[in-house]
Length: 230
Ligand SMILES: CC(C)(COP(=O)(O)OP(=O)(O)OC[C@H]1O[C@@H](n2cnc3c(N)ncnc32)[C@H](O)[C@@H]1OP(=O)(O)O)[C@@H](O)C(=O)NCCC(=O)NCCS
Image (cartoon, rainbow, N blue to C red; front, side):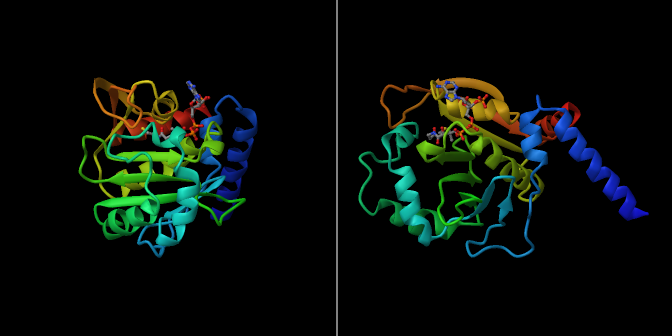
């Protein structure tokens, strides 16, 4: 009996997907099964799989792919002033070794993003940390992967994990005023805009930053609306 109920539920889901193309974000997400493996990966983080992506903890072995996709002024110029430019040789390995690994799974969680079709190379990162400045999350993606909805897809399991497992009640995000791509990811994933304030970025033309908040209730509401939309 239970099997029949589950089968008919799955069949309904598939029909919904076909019938509601306007709700592409929800389709992408609900097509994804977040696979929170029972065992943590080598980096002490859970591995998530989404429709197109694998997210797993960063390790030192990721340094060459990280460097290849990250050390690009188009990517780094959008980031906070603390990131050096020109980026120093060997800086990525040093950063992973000294800034990420010791905190990984403690007060910081840094997932490398891989596409399932090419699972040997990280193409970007989602970074979550406990003590906000005020933000608690950062992300970047190699330039050739922009504009395909990859970051929007990647943040879903991370937000679920932050609220449901790590116990965050509220998360703050920020972006340079003028970084429309980053702003759009926030808009598309339920965050609410709070304010604009002075900010310093690698690109000196950016002088202000936007601050956003995503609370646990907002996230729940956002996700439930996505389901209604289907
Ligand atoms: C910000 C970033 C992670 C976005 O990743 P992404 O996978 O390209 O994001 P998505 O494809 O999920 O969404 C991008 C959205 O911006 C829109 N967009 C792209 N270029 C744009 C532009 N010039 N102006 C306005 N919107 C733009 C896209 O159309 C898309 O929105 P849509 O789905 O409604 O069409 C990526 O651009 C990046 O790594 N940039 C450099 C580093 C960075 O800015 N990090 C964030 C610092 S706060």
